[in-house]
Length: 393
Image (tube, rainbow, N blue to C red; front, top):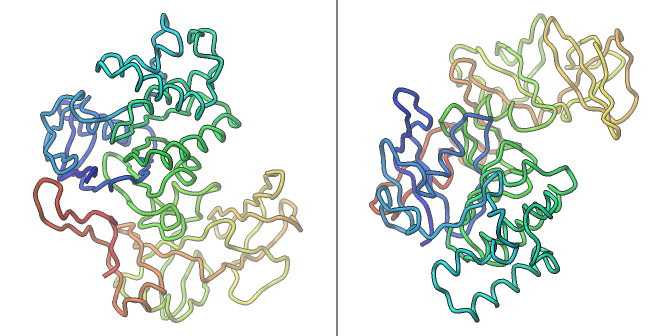
């Protein structure tokens, strides 16, 4: 299997630990996104796969083989860098086929592969130009072509679209998905852009300060965040997170309280202290101009115009929240009432910052929700769990 398995991997430079106890399986043939803010360890993780960085601790398996000491050229990887790294003195054609010629591939096969990638990435007519004669988008496509033409089992991309404008990024994302669907490589893609992660990835590995925060599908990362960091990082505008306390069926927020539906109470009761974070996405609450049952009173501070919708910032008992609305926009200073969609709220433990879970998961499993890594034992990449970093048990 052309999978990749990290077992208790650390990467440190002197006393500065960049990646901490990483346990993860990247499945054969999937598009996995390494997502997170600058300095979280995502590029370092990619470079360990490529063989450009040595592990400080732990084991890395590729296709069932321990590769800790295997050189980069023997790992079967192709890589696209953020700065494209094209040879300035070579033509587009020679940049693309350089690796194939270095491996002494037959000329007939080189020509066939070159023809395929030139057509796929719309580079026809540019073969004899040099990088200085190309636009940023064209250089990016040449870098992709150079990696794709190798047809390696592992396709690694380190923020390859960060130098492109919005329209070119949109087009390039489609090209990347098309490339993967054509060749089916195991693709690992590093980005700090959550839109790229959500649209390109089949699974997202979200990292922060060298630690894995969540590993799951884009839908679950957005709708069922495992912890406060995930909830805040994913989504624009980000999720509202406010301190609250659970007391006898109600959630106290500031000096106000709202009644929780029964299944949410069952979850909240599992937190002995009752000290929680209440989370709600801006698009999952409604603003009303008149008092409503089970609503939170607030005052409008200011309004942002997004073109097709508005972001309404409000203050409730000293806490700032934002709601997204498409019409009937209140004016600054106006009193409003926030009505949460109780099917889409989130509750987190205030100490651990881990999600308490969701009612439908309790119904499905008929058991409490506990977040914990599931680890299956095995050697050489065989039978490793880590398919979903967060399990409902």
